[in-house]
Amino acid sequence: MSDRTPEEREAARREREARRAGRTGEWDAPETRTPASPEVPSPPESPPPLSAVGTPPPMPPAADVDAVDDRIGSKKRPPTNSDGHEDGHAPRELPLGVRRVGHRIGAPTPAPKTPRPARTRTRTRSLLPRVIAVLALVLAIAAIWFLVELFQPFHGAAHGSVVVTVPSGATAGTIGNQLARDGVVSSGFFFGLRAMLAGDRGSLRAGVFRLQRGMTYGDALTILTTPPKAAPTTNVTVIPGRTRRQIASLLHQQGVHGRYLTSTRHTTLLNLRAYGAPRHLDNLEGFLFPSTYQLREPISIPALVTDQLTTFRQRFATVSMGYARKKNLTPYDVLIIGSMVQAEAGTVHDFPLVASVIYNRLRLGMVLGIDATTRYAVNNFTSPLTNSQLSSPSPYNTRVHTGLTPTPIDNPSLAAINAAAHPARTNYLYFVAKPCGNGASVFTSSYAQFLLDSQRYNQARAKRGGRSPVTCRG
Image 1: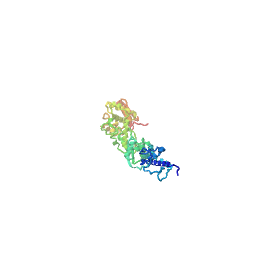
Image 2: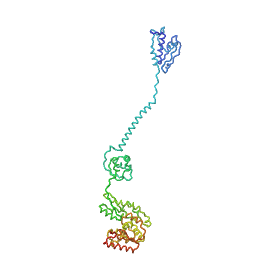
Image 3: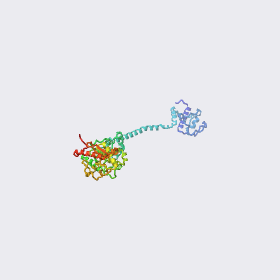
Image 4: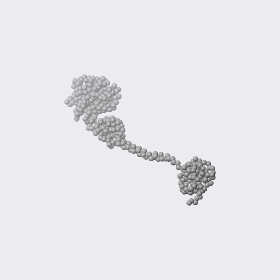
């Protein structure tokens, strides 16, 4: 049995019911009031909230317990006996722990926490390593592809044949684009890059190359940068003073096949009109510079002619034409005089002296009387000239016609051309080969002296049985 009084038990019951009513949120006004109950105002529609930590509001004083009980009690409360208990029921006591639990249950639910923005930053930070990994993978794949394209480790075999002409001065990029267009390599850009990495950009050679389609960049570079093996060559020497016909005969005797006379009729390498040559010149006599030329085997006649004309243009450009122009002579006139000097003078020392005789005779309007021009006209370079040949009406016969011949009579050396442009300042009008002079001549301005010199020459020739007395031994 409890040692609490009936009033304490009734108060505990009422307190329990009040707490229950607070949990359900319902407040019912009592239908009946006990006469002893004082008049109290109606409670608010909803109970006052609990404190933030779940502590129930303070209870009213003990004197007002009955009034509070009437206010929050049930609408249909069973009658009570004189002790204040329900009829037929013993007073009940709620364990103290139940009351404490009830306070906890009635506490308000805490509000949900607001999500923190740091979670978004965390997600961004977690994606960054993945993005970096993807970019690194893409770059690695691109680098591998680039290296494979550049060095072509899995390239197939080349095939076919392509003839490629690389012009002089072409850059590695230009050559690469040309090879790509012809199907030799797959990319002109990668070809130029390989040439740069290999240090071959300055080693690419000009010329005609036989390549294949589908070659690797390395193989194409090897061919284009490797000098060809030296081809066997033959030296061809053209002696100064030789004519076109004599050079053609010499080449034929040496077994060189080709038509030298045909190849020396016209050219596009020289502007002959710029030298003062006639408009309708039908041969290149005088322009075929004499020298020693190294030609690849088999010897090509057009290659020889090209070398002769190219050398002439270079050498003749060094000749000063000032004095000749003052004498109203063209470069072609100087070339003609030079061919006569080359044919008549036996030594280089005599070149300017022979040229002075020609200048003096031209100034006086005399015939030149040079036998070499008549020999050229009749193609007789070894035998004595006959009377009929000496009286030939050919324009090359300077015994008959005054002035210069229509064309040079041979191909003179640079020394003879310089002598023709700058003759010695003399009054000589005649010269005759000096007997046993080893090519030297005797010069004079007197016709009588010339006749005496000519007589001595003929006597020496007669003593030698008709052979030339120019060179004597012992």
